[in-house]
Length: 373
Image (cartoon, rainbow, N blue to C red; front, side, top):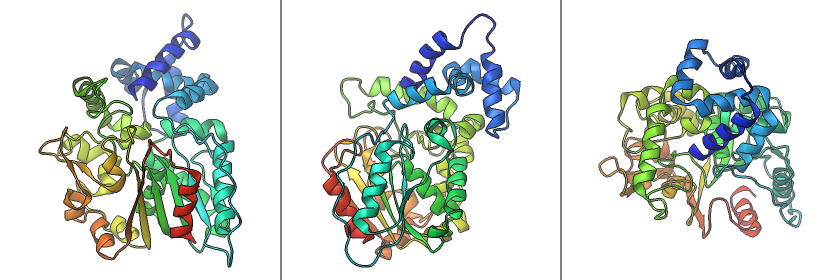
């Protein structure tokens, strides 16, 4: 994320800083149009602590195409830019409809996601649709960064409910942070219900370090990465930042999971029931029949990668020891229904040897046929 900020800062210096340019004013205009409650004083304070973030907000108003390019080029971006080999058409009766959610830096309007969606529908002999989190490719890309998880889920839910072909329920799969959107829909709505949810390299359990910068990467090393985590940690659980940044919503500093600011303001903490259990969220989780958690065993974008299957860093040893799913607090306390689902045989686990969402077409289609057909 810091690399994204650095790119934004460099670009904004060239694009958005003529003499007299009101960067804070443009940032406030973006927040106002996005429905985020903020005053000029709030933006001025944010500019002192996170000037690059304010620059990105300003770019969203004044240079959105350049901002979209920066987001697509960032190390956090997950772009499905390869066209999937079209499989043979599925046999037999049509399967349930399929919904696809894209990762950061991509868009449902791009050729890669269109290809994946079409291939899934053909393989399963089913209606398939990619559901965006904003209208049009430009803001579908930008909003993968500058629209928080709750608002992204609300937009997604409105699109789902507006599609009569999904009214009886559907299967869903996502890539990277696209799974946060589907998971959030299950948590907050699940009506019409997601019957089967496949999370491919999902960030449902959050990230405790920056992409390409974790304690497992010796080139950078844990000291620098922890320093970066601490820099974001001071801001990540600020209410305004949580109202803006999708990535701040799922940033889970493993050393701060008991901090009051995390438990109060983190969207992820709310969804996971880490501070207070929400009975509606638990009930909604129970409406889904099966969950398929797919891990990339060489993933360096999600840290710890075991979080793709609901593992988490041990709060007692937050930078070295990873707890498996069944030893985490959210499992043992069943704070959102994960343990109940597991005991009912609803959790399934798949993996592939590779980096973040770098599975093969054959692997993807095989999982879809195994769990959705």
